[in-house]
Image 1 (cartoon, helix red, strand yellow):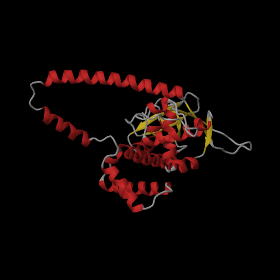
Image 2 (tube, helix red, strand yellow; image 1 turned 180 degrees about the horizontal axis):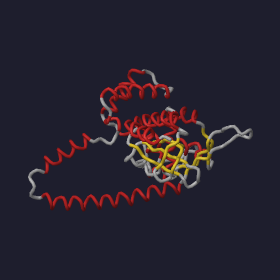
Image 3 (spheres, one colour; image 1 turned 60 degrees about the vertical axis):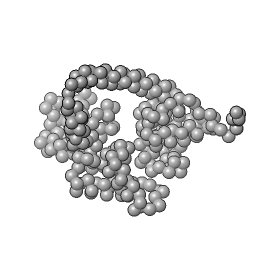
Image 4 (cartoon, helix red, strand yellow; image 1 turned 90 degrees about the horizontal axis):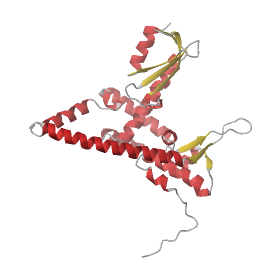
Length: 288
């Protein structure tokens, strides 16, 4: 058997880095590998990396890079430190691998998988007992899938056909404007539309985040500072409007959230809304 010789120009990557490949998006993992290369690869604990450097190394759009960095931060896989120049101006963020955070993530996911597997086994066992003599199992499964199809989890499938077409065109224009490496816009548009139609989860999530960010930006421009009367806390002022994926719970029960502040420090409130129409109706009904 041939002996594999370690060469000097190799980067030694901690084993923990390979364990999380199944827990993050592909783009986030590629960003992580670049951070490892720029830090450990050069014998450094951390390194300042600009967005343009990430773009050059990965060919991702800046928006995709920011999204991937946020995912890595939220999972505590990396540490990001903001830097300022001596004159007070902005500088590159510094990035550092967080091995303890990776260990915590992997352990928590492993325990969750064990619990889920046990739950599935128990559920299947109980289900087998209950349905052993039922002739309509297959039909029930088909009907369940139909119900799930009629109640999709992504906003994209909740739009009317006309709104879906309009927002898809706007989304494609946004992606093209953000990317520097598209050879054929026509081929690019076709590829993205196919991904959306095939229910590619990563593409649908990206569409949803773009759409909700756009909606929240417009709503905030229109209503920030607006005063409303709250049932228990009196007069409150709209401070921020943001999406569900900017909340700690990442709860999709409501897609848009609005935070308020009052005269006193304790007079704070957060409310969730299904959509922008529901939010604007609330403001209209309660504006002071």
